[in-house]
Figure (cartoon, rainbow, N blue to C red):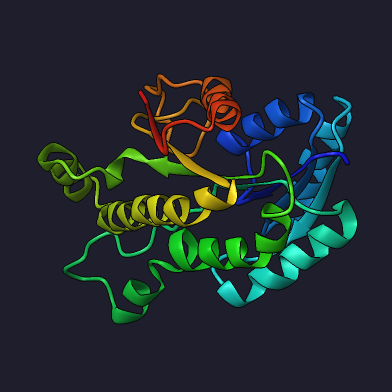
Length: 229
């Protein structure tokens, strides 16, 4: 049976590099993001490289949409072997002025929708060899005074809080799923990645290098958290 990867929160940068790395290893890909036209263009680019990529437009900020998206991907690709969760939320930049609705929604993408995806994929993940949940996370979630000051200065307090919650969710999911032979791990990106929306011209990290760390973690099924940068 061929292996498949569902990339949730697909776009340029890390997720494209991960898709290419796993695609070269023979994985068929399901790509989830909101913009259908962009997805179609990027799926074609992968197809031109000999990598099968199917698109599933959807909004991962709505946890109720996750189950149907997973079902559509399964119907098209067969059982999903690996989930790559690359989606994130940047709401509530300033915790002192953010409205209650944005605070409540802050965890929908990084925690609620991630867990919803894992629940929907559980029959697939527990029935296949080398199954995994691989999560992109950011260094703003690290508990450190300097990082906290950075999040405040950049007005990204909500993102820092969401990343911290996602970090804990990854560890809890790994503790729960590792006895079922499902690996759950994250790569925590500690600096800016070239070519992403965060790149102001001073970025130092290369997306393919981060993708390689995901591949190494998947192969070794080693540490739950790997820091890059």
